[in-house]
Image 1 (spheres, rainbow, N blue to C red):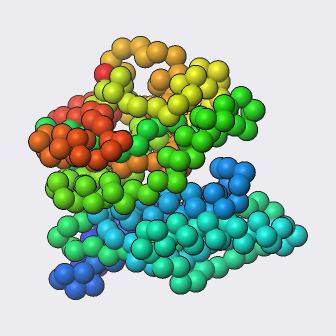
Image 2 (tube, rainbow, N blue to C red):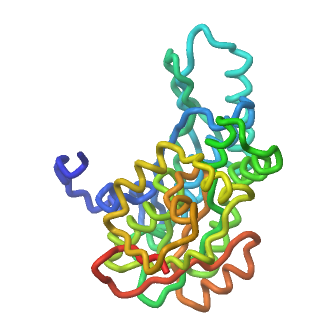
Length: 314
């Protein structure tokens, strides 16, 4: 669909939609550029306050992935007119307080009457034009760092089916509530080449975008990928979200699997994440330092010269 839109030349657009990056970047001055993103979703948890906070963390992640600092946000609300307004107030409060935690100010928003609840934010951030971290600058020889575990989509599906253990749900919620603020700070201090957040398209889908935009192949070490507690078991039990199936149908043509993986593991590589971690491409010494210095971060693969497939799972 986007390919049908005309390209409008503007020398101040540093990052547009051409490379499927996490956010758009527009230069205001030689020392200041704005980062623009928008993200909203249906509830992934039952508690209204927690849903609002997760939605905020999810929206903020795209600004962090570009190397930017969040500044302000506008709330997006779709809510039934006959719905419980106390629940809506809790959704808004959860999002508002998570934005404050990030140092980002909510300055307005828009709401519509909708039978299906949806909530999120349009976020504006700031970055120096020379310090943007796009998804199109991964280099052969780089190592890949992932800053969170995978599996929020599968755990959420297991919860809906009534088979998820409480500690596993709690661990998934804690992961989704964690801001990528420290990951952003670490990435900037150690000099990342490229970055994307791992969200709705899963680890494979977002790796594919980085590989295609950078003209490289991304090699994922399957045994190095860390999964949320219970996620592998629920995947083996068939708790597969619809988004995972869509991701696999879309992206599998770009994937080479070197050998058969254990049951459920390949599914999880396509699992859609809500408020997932950052996938960072950096030179070997810097990537290793990031993994050592950022709690929860780990090496997950490497960047190699472009092969027939954009993704190689080994």
